[in-house]
Length: 502
Image 1 (cartoon, helix red, strand yellow):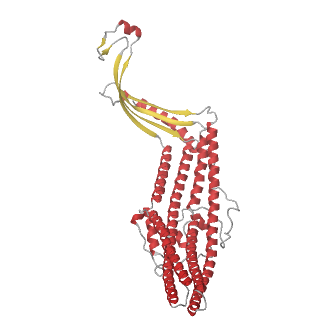
Image 2 (cartoon, rainbow, N blue to C red):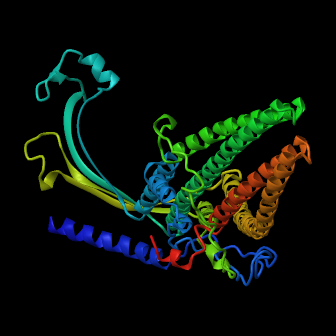
């Protein structure tokens, strides 16, 4: 036994040491990853619609803050918290992330040997030769209890063995696969962050639109009351013979039109309420938001800083995800190229085998084997070349997708910066128009009461006032939407403290 033991030890050392040394000193085939470069045209020094922006680089690991709190709306804050907990699209993205992490762990298992154990019992019969079976067909083998011939026998064998197989990663195939799966897991984490940011931004946009809907509905309700008073005034003047029947008809038409417009707001409000319910993972039938008047709802568009560093673009998860997918695709080129090289594996087997259960697990019944195996594809009619070409094309595609994502990010920031700047100026002018329209209504009503103008003049100025007030509210909604869009385009907020919060 000692002789066999020392012989096995020498074999293990002689076999394993050179292979391990070769593995440690080998390099992974395929190109090492470098982040795809962006041209100067794709990464301007500053944004056209902003001031003093610097060139950005992906850095999705920066944490995001609760950016929606900048609007100072408690109800929005409470709804945003429910998105994180109940939104089913987030649950899908989170499950995909866990799946990607599991695949990464699975790829790492390739660094280690596969070990298996087998226990079996076999019963077999060895056939006799033709000559023996014809000359002696009635004989009985007394030692085995089987019909006997020259070499016929029935035997039982008990086996207990353990085996292992270990692929030595000489060319880095396993390392490249782990590299690819790790990058894919990181991209999946970025997808989760993208889904979270998108859901939060959609919630804020829908919530603000619903509140603007409420204020416009309130405006129409107040307008209906004002038009009803105008109709009453006109009827009284008609009854005393001061006004004509046409004035009454115009006043009544104006009132009914305003009532119809007020009712129409209910359609959009219901749809927005349903959309918000879906974002927080609730059935629309189990969710309702009470309407608020303009006196009850106060919201401010957060002031845009004069200097918006484009480093905040590093917080965009879709950019990080696109860059990580490029890294994964690059590693797959190495996996494909490793197929051109031979596969070296170390296999071993050891255990016990005996025809009898008595003294089955004992030294005389022991067996073992150990040895390397080398496998190489000699001819595959271009299959490996096609797989490699496919991997290279997939990498080129991911690089183009990454660059396009960056360009789109710059466009979204530019769009929303321009919208905020222009809408702010427009809102100031529009407020002046509203004040002028209100004054015009007051003056024209006084003239109508004095009998110096017809009711058509009153209808005209009241219609102009309503249109200007609705435009002013619409501008507020557009400014809020652009503000949310800018926050989303920046990857989760422009406040400096947001990077360290949450």
